[in-house]
Length: 163
Image (cartoon, rainbow, N blue to C red):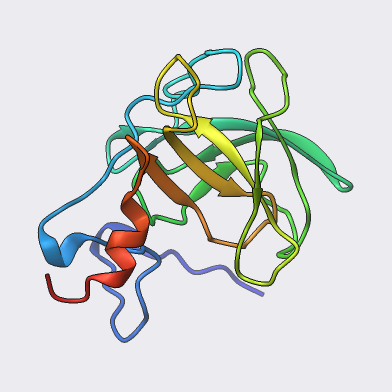
C-alpha cells in the first residue's frame, strides 16, 4: 500500500473530541515545567523531545513487551507521547526515574473501578505528595491527577463546566 504525504502543519481535524482534558475554556493551560523522580532527579528536558515548544517529561517504562524511555507531553490533559510507545492499550507498566532507575513511588489505587494504580511524579525536589502529578500504570488509561498544595487541580477542571 502506498503511503501518502500529509501536510500536518496545515491539517485541521474537526468533529473529533479533544485529546486533552482541557482548561482552555477558562483561558488556562497547565504545563508541568518541573518534575522530579523519587530521589529528586529532574524528569523535564532530559531529552530533546518537546510538545508545543515545552520540554517533555521523561520516564523509563518496562512492560512484558520491552522497555525504554517514554516522553510525555507536559501539558495537562495532552495525551501525546514519544519514544517507547508501541505498547498495547491496557498493558500494565512499571514506571521508573530515567536518571536514578528507581521505581516511581506508588500513591494508591485509581478510584474508577479499574485495576490501575497511581504513581507519583513530584513537582518539587522535596518529593512531597502535596505537590505531584499522579499517573496511572496502565497504558492508555488517562486518569492522571495534578495535586498542588494538597489541592486537586484536575478535579476542579472536570467539575467546573462553565466557571
